[in-house]
Image (cartoon, rainbow, N blue to C red; front, side, top):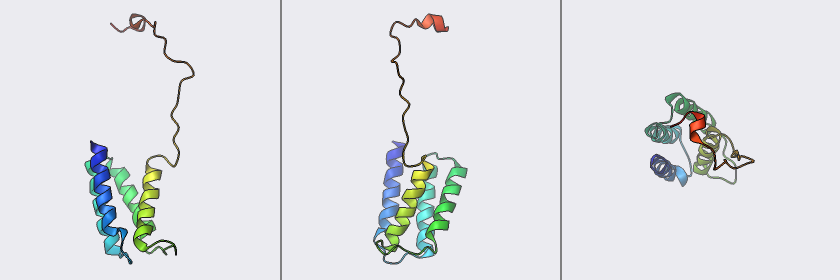
Length: 113
């Protein structure tokens, strides 16, 4: 449920800036405020949120826009990249055991009763 709320808030925030032809520093401040609140409400650590917002502001304010993107799309690109980095990068692998657990394992031998 927390992730749904976070996703909804981020989606709403991004929609506000998405179609803008020109993104001002004030637009970035308002967007990062909404992102900050959404992350804090999702119980993300305050220091993590603070660093995340700082990185977004550094990259989004005063950045030259790529020719193929609108300024709004450029800010969204920055947020997406920073969220990806925050979550551990592009690719995360799940550790899979070579052997499945033994079904005949006796819990009592492990001290559980």
